Image (tube, rainbow, N blue to C red):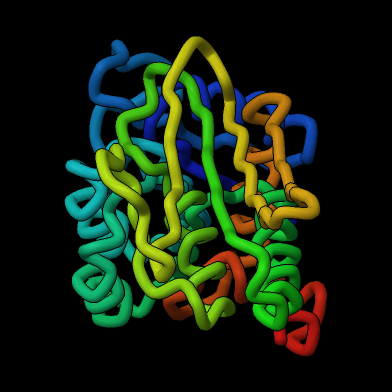
Length: 257
């Protein structure tokens, strides 16, 4: 059976989702964006008409409208994929909306399959380096100059992974440092310039050498591919999930230990 999706937010990611969906045999039933003229399958609001026949909604909008979007989608009993970032301080509120509505919901700091493998590689590397105190950890990320959040959601997740697996790191610092960094602090720097889709680097430095793990996105296709895979996975499911739950199912829980 063909999966019918609604794309909420018709920016660059929305256009990429639309293009890739056709290649993957997924039907874009509707596109919802308040700033585009209503025509054909393009609508200006989330409502019964715009979600008619839709199985899963994919949201790549802005954090200030995300909660309202979740409420509207949940009220219409549609499952949801959320790629919008910078709303994570409201996770409990979103989960309650989802649970009360009885829908399926999946979100990610980053829907790239490669980035989600990076999370696991970073966790394993951190566990190894935890045994060698002569190494100190650092990290930085680069994104395009239109990105609204800093650090990126991926950077936040990578920071969590590092701090969880390194006994010597207790605090995350993302702001400019005008002082000597403390030994228990992890500095994750951010750069915004041009049209960079996204680069994340994790480093382990000692007097003897430096080891780096680097992920560079070549465009938005990887994010769109992961989000569409998540839409296929969450279809007909109920519950509140992270993208890691889908990855666990594919790879196996033991690989995340």
